[in-house]
Length: 246
Image (cartoon, rainbow, N blue to C red; front, side, top):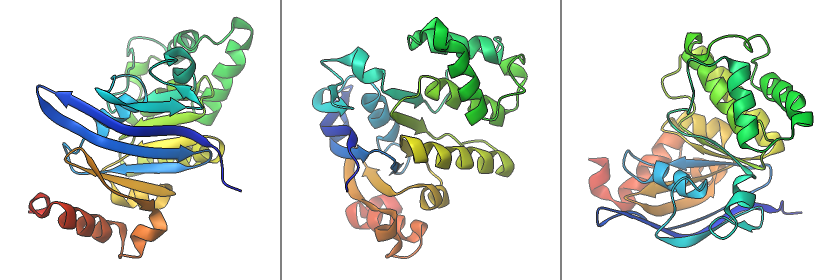
């Protein structure tokens, strides 16, 4: 039986300074799925994620999250989304518990359920011993964990992660990847990454953006039929825009 859709985007367009940044992108996400978003720098990945989460309104197109129209019913739709931008929105002078309580209040978690939500988010992100620590004193890997914790504290159906392992050391990358796999078991995850081995190991499906356009959509297994993920990515992008591979 096919899992239900948690997110659907159709014909998304974004213009900046009379330049077409995203050009007619459509995609779908199903419950329990990890979708990888790949592309060269400037391909439109972060802009697309910002539109999918409601951080940036599209010039045209439609987005539905858990059957709520993101443009017509933004509060209901955004309540179903957790978002970790490429630069995590952390207040580094706050303690972890205080920051996560603040995030919980922003998501309208009732006071009676706040302690439970805080404990669960910290447990899932391996932050049980960090509650009283100042965020700025933590390693970058643990700051990423705090960023993910704020994205999942309201138990969203869709989690959007923009380059969650960038700048981390190998051990930190391993830990964050393990967390993403666990999140994919209970929710839907959209993962933007430059690391093709990360997409290969984590993602059920991938899409590739190039110059704001969707040039590939398929399962990871289908991509690997073309070779490893790196070879497949280079082959697809060369075929669509030969100059991009130069």
